[in-house]
Length: 479
Ligand SMILES: [Ca+2]
Ligand SMILES: [Ca+2]
Image: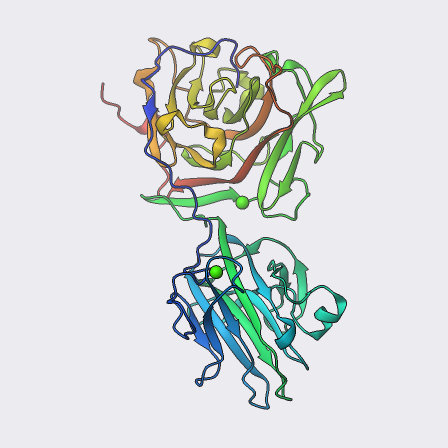
């Protein structure tokens, strides 16, 4: 981030990365029943039915479908005892993965639920023995919902799965759009349920367009002997401030050595949690003599690391004069000052270069315009701001290697440095995330710039080697 004019020294040719796989959206197989053969059938592709062997769960074909030609129909079992009928689908899930889920349901006037019959859709997270560890359900479809007007007949009704239940006593404990797989999870089960009453009451419900969206993968260790030592998944409630045990703020509008235009604040207007992600928002507003506000978060004084794989999954903002950065500074900055403390820029992008990101180091004798770095681009010149990408470094004793979406694109070693200058990356560094507006390198916003802009960070994770590397002075370095 400390740049007046951007580097050219030591730059490698821009590397075009292999196509990044975006996270799958809906992980369900046959979510709209369009893979099923036309007509009424109990054989549903991807789904396991449960209920009455004589058949009360069907794929149906017809104009009632919400999308395509097919939908799912269920009616109760008429057993004169509480009975359950429906379909389910299991999806492998690891602890820490997060999802959103919903579906659509419809009742027709001539066959709506009566008595104490009730239907819903749910997602449960289960362990290897199928024990329920967490449970989330949609609102309930029953005669009360019909009377209250929350479930009108003869129309498709959206059923987001947002009620979290205690899986032991089936009481609602929380309302959230984010479904989190708890420790011990091996599977996520998506289920359509119709609970029939003891009176043998009648009625049926149709379902279509069911979704289970994987919104964030779990922290699975990358290849090699990396182990997760620190992370922030940003899973706090919507609208809350970032975790104060991990992050503090640098506030003010001093230009930050780069003639930046924003005033950094610690308000949730500028940094907050939304849907399991940290949002850093740059706004156009008059504030303490500046025309823009934004935020700059850092782990200084709370957490610092020497070596490791440090990565963030984020969706960067865009536009002329917009400058997001994910970077590190030596924890000894107060005593040694910059650039002797060393700076590792894991990801920087400036708005006028939507298809380029930069990884850079700055140290004594090679800082500012002399920083040593390299760029990366996406296939076909795609803009990085169009999607989430994982930006990382693997920082070892005498090597730092930058990657995007697991594809290495730039490496520095002591041999990369200008003659006579020093490798200063053997000391703890803290992490920073900020979104600058304007400055000498990106230039200032203009009429094309759209504000607010958001830097959305799904997670930050730090991995280290199982066996800590030896201090540099104990290593014999060839050459
Ligand atoms: Ca359908
Ligand atoms: Ca997250």
